[in-house]
Length: 283
Ligand code: NAP
Image 1 (spheres, rainbow, N blue to C red):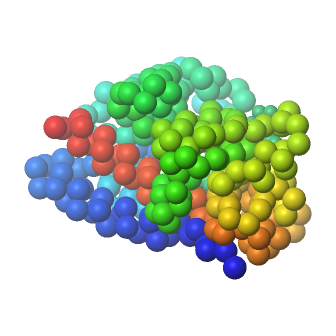
Image 2 (image 1 turned 135 degrees about the vertical axis):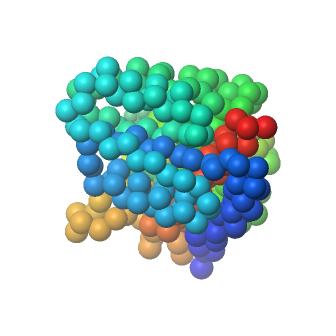
């Protein structure tokens, strides 16, 4: 039976390290602080905000919530972001997305100060990930996917990794992070021909398509490690990933569950970015 790649274990380890780093910051009068900007009250945004609040409290990070009405004008949203950019007591800003369709999301992302961009949404952060230089942070979920593999000592160097999904939030940054670890990466998407051939050739499979159960026995093989990034709602209303877990766990060597896999580690990576941003801002 496959090893379960659970996120809680590495998340706790990171949180314990962050408590010490946050305490060292406090000892010199710096309170690491994350501001979350939420427009409207979507259930998944509220759930993520609750999880982030819990993680920040455990890590010794202050949290400020800017809850803005769904009807907010673009100018007012930009004003809020600029206010947080100028606030020296705020070290990281998380803009929950997607924004309502009435707002220009690209312009809102561009308004954020790159040094406070703890979720890799600005052009500066993306360039940093692309070039492997600079101080930008990768998107937290993408980084959590790779950190999960590293925590469980899954070899990345020289491994063949297949990533399913090419979004700017997950697929592409995961591919670049794996490349930086010297993996050989195949990036798959909805137009990929014979997906099952691409995925079953790989040593590592990252499923980030956002489509319930699209990865099954025909896409995997023995010896593989599978990371399921998908968060979907099954027809019965339960939470499920992109991978048919019960079908694949008997075949592969390691697999992350949903929930309890990547999602459980994402807030710890977010907290780590905030503490790093606070350290850099006050060095
Ligand atoms: P997205 O923007 O919708 O992108 C999905 C990607 O998957 C696209 O590149 C799409 O290809 C590809 N795709 C869709 N169906 C496919 C198929 N049948 N075969 C091959 N490729 C396919 O989604 P996202 O924002 O990247 O999110 C992906 C998933 O991660 C979602 O379930 C989301 O809820 C979840 N998520 C998890 C966390 C976490 O903490 N675990 C955080 C954020 C998001 P094209 O480009 O060709 O359209």
